[in-house]
Amino acid sequence: MTLNGTVHRTFFLLCLVVFSASTVWSMWETHPHLLYPALIGSSLLGFITAMVTVFKQQWSPYTASIYALLEGVVVGVISSIAELNFPGIVMQAVGLTFGTLFCLLAAYRSGLIKPTENFKLGVVAATGGIALLYLVSMVSSLVFSAPIPMIHESGPIGIGFSLFVVVIAALNLVLDFDFIEQGVEYGAPKYMEWYAAFGLVVTLIWLYLEILRLLMKIRSND
Image (cartoon, rainbow, N blue to C red; front, top):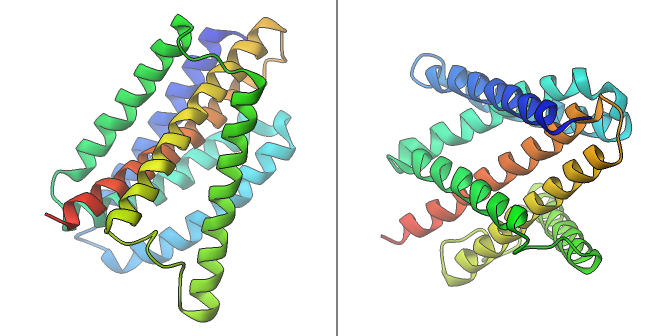
C-alpha cells in the first residue's frame, strides 16, 4: 500500500461517482419517472455493496467501483431535486465539501488535529449515534408515518442538528487520513489502497449530502 496509489484510486472512484451522477442528472428532463426507483434501488444495492466491502476487504478492488457507480446515482437524484428547488445549491455544496476536505487535510498534515484514541472513540461514537438516530427515524416514518420531529425541519433545532452532523462527518475525514497513513507506514497489502479509497469516498459522499441538507434548510428560511 502506498500513498500515491491510494490517492489515484480515490480520484478514480470520485470520477465514477461524478460520471454516474451526471448521467442521472441528464435524465431529469427526459425520464423523470425513473429517478425515484433508481434512487431506492441504488441506495439498497449501494448499502449491500458497502457491507460486502467492509467484511471482505480483499474484494475492494472490485466492489469499491461498483459502490461508487451506485452511490453516484443516489447523489445525482438528490442533487437534481435540490437544484430544482434551490438553483445553485449543488455547486455551493460541492465547493464546501472539497474546501472542508483540503482544510482538514492541511490541519492533519500540520499536526493541528491529532487523531488520539479519545478523539477516534468520540468520533466513532458520535457517528454511530447519528446512524442509529437516522435508522430510528426511518423506521418510525415507514411504520408510523411519523419521523423524529424537528431534526428534519428547517427551524433552529433542525439547522443545529444538521450542522452537528456536518461537523462529525468532516471529522471522519481525519480518521480516514489516519487510516491511510497507518496502512502505508505498516505496509498493508496492495488491495488496501482500494479499501482506504472506498472509505474516503464514503465519507465524502456523506459529507456532501449533509452539507446539501444543511444548505437546503438554511435557504428554506430565506
